[in-house]
Length: 218
Image (cartoon, rainbow, N blue to C red; front, side, top):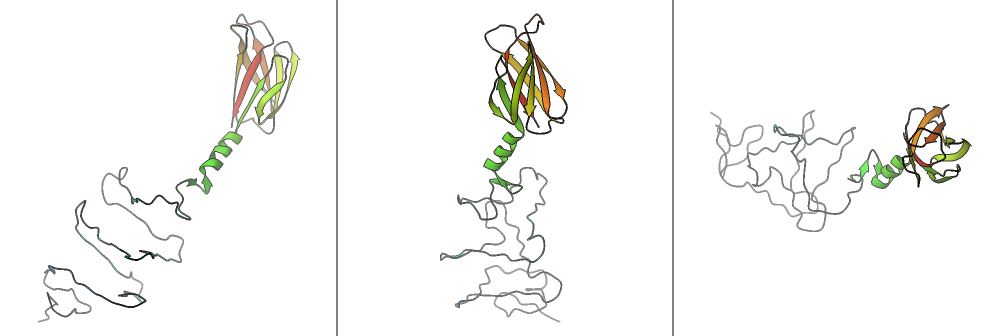
């Protein structure tokens, strides 16, 4: 009858150590002193290299700990495929589960939380601003404070034509009349794919020259 290794016994390859459902009651330490690795586990077949499992509750030691007492790396992973691996949870509250935490405040090269789809926060803001076209047009048709809206012309009393720097046919325009005159109103209509016609009126619906602000969200 084969007897698996127990406390103080020799490790037996290809078997459960210890056998018979027993478990070791203290740490099994492997201590080395060299410039390479203390131990090496490898699988020349198609399976994995190692499994580490535990039943530690929250707040206890984790299943794996790599602690470098000097100034070098504590861990390193290498891979050749399209994915380096995954961190998954078997818990039911996946929305609250955290894949990891850290007290390090530096930015990790290639793992920058400030980047989304390869863009940092400033680039995302710039892209958003580029898709939002704005301008202020005076009562006499002069354009100012513009971004993405390149020109304006007064065509008639309370009638203006505003030109954009590209196709705005799928964008959402908005116009607001303002100035010293009370009760000013404004409306707009598309003209082709790159222009908007703006109509400004008094509160009574009479055409009147009014300063207005125009925004086009794309």
